[in-house]
Length: 199
Image (cartoon, rainbow, N blue to C red):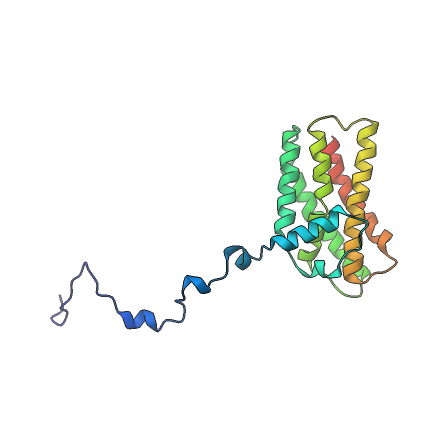
């Protein structure tokens, strides 16, 4: 033991000057809420969801400026849950097709538009537009979609998903007159999800 130490080993004395000068110690009242700090805004999620659910309404181009992946992840989990309840364990296929489809659509949009778009924005839009496919998968829990009704309803849902996605991409990237060119690869991607849902 050093001769100059007069304190206790098991009860250290606190130094109040040390904590009062630290720039990292703030009160909890000044902290932002956790959801805001994580970038989860329920108003934005609701706005994007209503844009997808109403494909005839013009899209706001500022939707693509936010890379919000909370809604798309929730919709992917909802699609997987409804597929699981329908007796189809397709988790890897859903994630794999989502990732590869986002890469392909991202490359196509960067080639077609004069202004570039980030991968996160493409994943956000394609994930939000997966919501009608969740509705189709929910219907597959109650009855088979392998007949004429299933084919017609899946074609309607594929058109709904691709129309919503292309509408948002066209409005955000200022690609007037190219909606069919954007909707076609989106329809191919959502067609793969429909095949997972039907079979």
